[in-house]
Image (cartoon, rainbow, N blue to C red; front, side, top):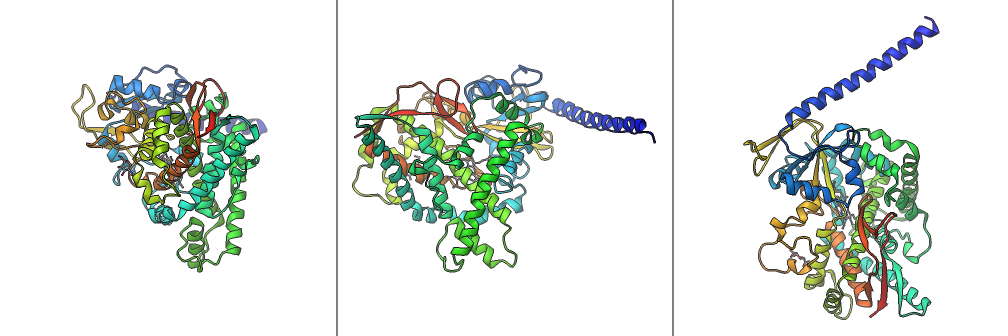
Length: 513
Ligand code: HEM
Ligand SMILES: *[C@@H]1O[C@H](CO)[C@@H](O)[C@H](O)[C@H]1NC(C)=O
């Protein structure tokens, strides 16, 4: 065969492959289009990007609020390259998708899994399938139970104390009555130090205030500055997960994974040489549990599995908690009356035990109210593994079916902000920050910020106890005010920043009380 005909054949083969893939996508998209034709939604605003441009650049969640107000509880819109997405707020559909029956039929979308795999590895945020997921979940559960968290109380206090000592020092060094402190950076240091200590008995010591390569690497990846490259990635990874490997963003992803992996691997090997797995009886840190599992089974745990899970826990405990700590302080800074009432509430002498937190209704409700209005995880994402029929609490407008047939591959969003700001559920003042609503007698709606069902947040109790401790500690010692216009923006989680472009920021004016 001549070189030329070889080339021609290769080109032909490549062409038919592309034609095949495109054809398949087209047929799939046409049939999906037909079966969802009765679902209402906005007209597509761009052929290439669908709604992605607006979703990325406008206030996080604002379009979901608008669409669900206009079109009802099931809304269809387009992502990049014309793929269809359903946004769902129907209670019955959500209970089905997230419940025991639906959750493994609606795994995370391929793109989301690719993101978790490439940044964290094959840990619990990536795993799918009932058996494999339940196995990972069981291995983590004892370390995050209410009983374990009671033992972490002293760690939560120690870390909160380190943070407030740093702020006191900033005030002392300035010699002034008040200083401006950029809170998101400190909240991140607090969250990362705390989860590493509580889960792995490891001290990152970010709260000492020194610059730290790890925190910087994590921030480079997830604390977006509205760069165009971040938009392309977010818009396209649903359809082309391999976009996560290319360009500068891909390089950053590899770097963060490697850096977190190097630290986690070292933590694991240090623990293996220094801790006796059987003398840690009763020590339920995740590290102790992993060491015991490693020693007890005939096969040792693979280091890459252990490291993937460690990366996953560090990241899950860092991103969300640091965002919420910043949002709590922001809400307090906007409401000096609430700050004062909260200060009075938590100013009983001594460190109260975790149980005594139950006695702090305003602390509890201020944190729930922050999670309601500023859910760090804005959407819950799923993808139909097979064509599946979902029950609805009411038929879609203009139809009579109480089921919605969702074609294989369709991506589903559950917009957390819409559920948590629905006036039908929360009343006409749903858009207002009003912690007292949680204290009103009568039935209380559920918070959705931690999701529901077998894949809901396994760190919920941990997070609530941690956030309560740091909020109580800070409000006892300092008062906060904010003289900037702050907006929410879509980073990996929803974070605050000064209105305009840039990574997260929350400068607060801090004084001693
Ligand atoms: C305010 C703090 C937090 C919020 C709002 C939050 C929210 C969530 C949400 C919404 C999910 C479900 C994700 C999905 O289905 O796509 C989730 C899962 C998870 N969270 Fe959290 N989280 C928080 C703190 C934490 C902490 C502190 C930890 C660990 C120490 C943690 C560990 C996890 C893990 C391991 C999962 C995966 C569970 C599974 O797939 O079975 N989270 N979280
Ligand atoms: C916090 O408030 C919620 C809602 O009112 C309530 O169900 C829960 O028991 C409270 N938690 C604590 C620890 O008091």
